Image (cartoon, rainbow, N blue to C red):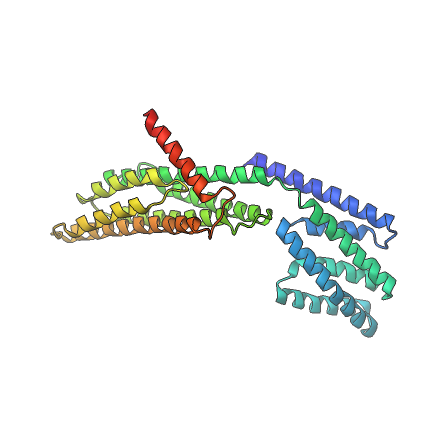
Length: 354
C-alpha cells in the first residue's frame, strides 16, 4: 500500500471513530442512559472492522448480551469477593467465546459486566439500559462502516493487477535471458521475492475490499492474487533449476524462446490454452531428441525437462482460474465477457498501430 493511500485510510478510520464515538455518547446522554460514555467505547471497538465483520460482530454482541447478564447475575450474587467473581466471569466468557470463534465480542461483554459489578443492579430497567448502550454503539458503527470508498479501493486493486502482470512479464524475460546466457545478470531472485511480498499485500487488500462490499461476489480478486502467488512460487522453483544447470544444452534456446513468447500472455483474462498446446509440442519434440551421451548432458536435459514441467504448472494455475471465471464461480463487478473483449479490442488496436 502506497504512503498516500495508507494516510488516507488512517485519517478515514480516525474520523469514523471520533465522530461515531462522540455521536454514541451524545445520544446516550440524551436518552439519560447510565454509563453513557460506554456507548462511545462500544462504537469504537466495533468500528475497527470491515462492513461484513461489523455486521457479524454486532449480531454476536447482541446474542451474547443475554449470556453476559445471566453469568454476571450468577457469579456476582453467589461468589463472595468482586475480584474473584469477575475473574470467574472472564474465564467462563472467554472460554465460551473462544470456543465459538467470537473472541472479538469479549471486550464489550467485559465492559457491560463491569457495570453490573459496579452497581449490583439486575433490575429490568438497568438491563434495558445496558442493552440500549450495546444497541446504540453497534448501530452507529454499522451505519458509519457503510461509508467506504469502495470505488477508489477497487481502482487501486485493479492498478495492482497491472503491476503484478508487469512484474511477471519482467521476471519471465529475465529468466529467458538467464537460460540463454547462463549468466544471471539481473537480480531475478530479488525481483521474485519483491513481487511475492507485493502479492501477499495485495491479497490482504483484496480480502479487505471483499469484506467491505455487499455485492454477491465470492472473492474474484482474492482468487486472482492467490493464483499469481502460486505462479510466482513456480517461477522461484524454475529459477533454482536454471541455477543448478552446469551447462546449457542446445534445447535451452528453444525453451528460452518459448518463455519469451509466453511473457506476452500473462494478462488477467488471457486463456492460456494456446500456450499450453504449444508447450505440449515442445514436450513431444524433446521426447524425440537423441539420448544424451554424457552424464552432465543427461542432468542438464533432465533439469530442462523440469523447467518445462514448471512452465506447464504455471499455465495450469492460470487455466483453472480462467475456467472458473468463465463458469461464474468467480465473479467480478465487470463481467468476464466484458473484460475479455475489452482486452481483445486493445490487442487489435495495438497490432494495427504497429
